Image: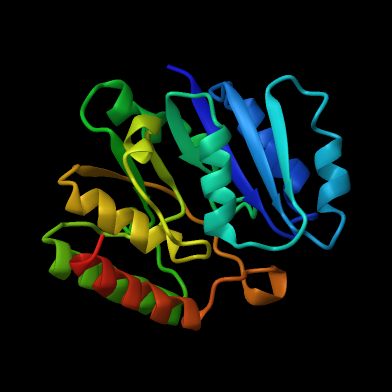
Length: 225
């Protein structure tokens, strides 16, 4: 099965070459699609170094539209049967791809989430509390049994996404995607993954205000499409 790795990028000049090498070294990506979301550092120039690779495509936004907008554009452009969403900041390790892909390859499910909490690793207190709370709300509203709704590692057959209408353009992509998958009664299979969280001084962008938006998104899409 062909696998498209979709990588939204916004001001990630420090990690971009590393994540490119790591994804390539898995030997599992049929194509890598980078979406430059209006970066203002040297990200655009670094991405241009990758275009000579026949497995790489680069999309550029002239201004910052948000992670969700970048992901949607990347998925639309993808040719693979399976989509892996990969952040560019090295918090998630592409070495996890084999176990993320296996449940789909074995026809166990069409959607896989990598759970940071199944591996029992301790994360920063408030970050852990916010994620646990949002996952609890997800399970309460949608009668699911997830452990990590906000995970950045979401893997799925592209045909699943073709049946969705996602409005989110920012970090609210995660709760909207999850909510609509659950409303469609599509089972989500979780596998434990490692996680290397970075701080805001290192470029982390998601914050507590995004948790509030995620909370509202989960409630809203429980009752509307």
